[in-house]
Length: 140
Image (cartoon, rainbow, N blue to C red; front, side, top):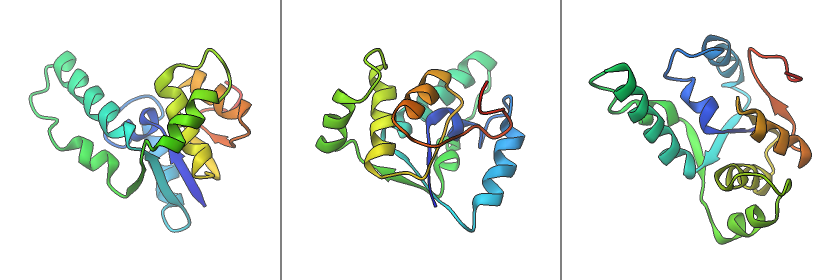
């Protein structure tokens, strides 16, 4: 099974946020039967989010946590095909970076789309991508 993780999910691998424990447990159960993938965009988003987190919390050293968070996750390049799909993908009010995530998942034909971003989850559903939100009910 090919599982697409967006940045909000990937961050739960290294930050103690709401639903992080449930996500990590779910991910552990998937480890032998799933391949994890994300957009190369996630490398920027995850690193920037960890830098913000460190600055807000006054944590001196989160260096390398991005590598830990993305360990074992394959990368889908933001190719011209992904950009073309992202330009057309529904809904029309989808934010640019979310469109790239949704288009990347559609491009690789992901079997499951994992996110904790409600707008992105709605877009995934609109585009017929099966979604999972470990630790949260899917209809929330």
